[in-house]
Length: 221
Image (cartoon, rainbow, N blue to C red; front, side, top):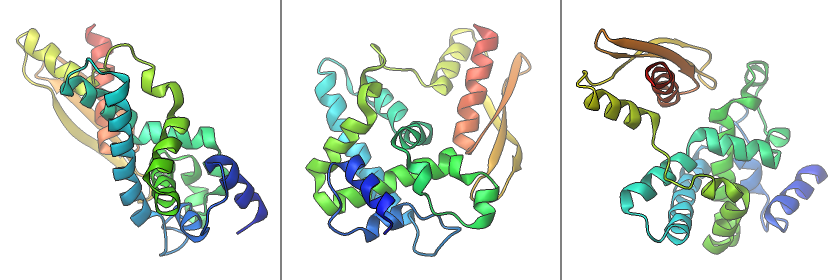
């Protein structure tokens, strides 16, 4: 492990890891090595979900399950995880293959979000759940309380708009997929019958659908 990475990990987590190998793996993309972050990302995703659910349960004692779920879903998206990664400086230490670097994967929401979850998984293995929970709360900071009311997902909001105005339910169609496997780009169109339509792009189908729903809401409201 390089001296720079060692210092960054110590600063990020509050101490140097006992075993640096999982953290190096958490920062390794599949284009660089077969021993990459995917397994740790799987683990970290679950640790993040539990830590965030517990935190929201404490922060909003009067909210019902549905409202807490909306908050949780908004805080663990790939885009938010990528935003956390950028704030932490993860991009500097990502290990990418040449083609992935050339394709801009170092700034991909998918890659950065996955690496963040993988780092959470590595820290959980190294220091235990309490330390992982503390890291999540520190790294997410005031993002957890940014909304006084639980945020409504754009797709749910659009569905409710259509129902309230006696229109057909929104339909989503992938109209284009481009880019390499590690940095795909999806374009999705959303329509409400023949009444209105919009399209948008994202680094995943879900992200593109969300952006298209938001774009159509902007047209309608």
